[in-house]
Image (cartoon, rainbow, N blue to C red):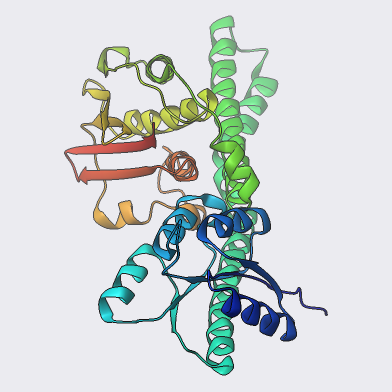
Length: 366
């Protein structure tokens, strides 16, 4: 099977070194691209998405540290491995580069063997990272296949049993009895529908997470009235469980980078979780504010809470592998909310005191 030619971008302001490196790499079978300054290097990195970048530190216009900072800031280039070229390699220089996200250093002058060894090492490590990501995606697919019947069994069983009762006992049932059975069938059907939609949604998010263009499209939306969306979603969830009086809203108008649909989904799942795991008559408080140019949404309930292990296990694969512990659900909705927040370059944090209180904190870009 043919292996794809690796593309390496070399950013070096000394023309002699740049041309020699490009020629050497092409002779070794790489697709080599050269840039004689940092600004050009950034443009070529965005355009070509190289497999590896080799960058000088001391350059005019934009030095190597600034180049690296810009590369790590942009999603398309954030994971491209980078090797610094430097005429000096003291500990302070190395520490600064590593803190910014550099992968390796080469001190000038270096030999052909040293250069090729550094390139080989970084490409091998990157291949291992890519393989691990693919294995996680494959594990997700397998987990869905194994756990989907388990998750769907309860509501489906309820629909079958109740419909059989309706068919077999229809002659002896009065109008109110038929209506009661019909309502239970509808509730089970709605639960089944939501479970199905959540499984599909989570699988879709995991696929989006592996595609740069899909993530960029997801992050391209902006909403100017998140307080209205949050309020509507929160009230909807409160009405569904008959707890309008328990809902306390303290919201301010802001502008954030997310679509209305995705924000609504996050709020619905987090607040649904808060109502599920807190007793009726206790408050569920929803607030928002701005901190360091970040939009902060907090949902606080006075419920059963979670221990440290349960909080740490709130993630993609643990949730799919975990069996239903009770009739309240598997926690998949909260995992979806967490994944959505992360894909929007945000963060979802949970602080919980078992038996007392849980705070879900959603941080999103402004």
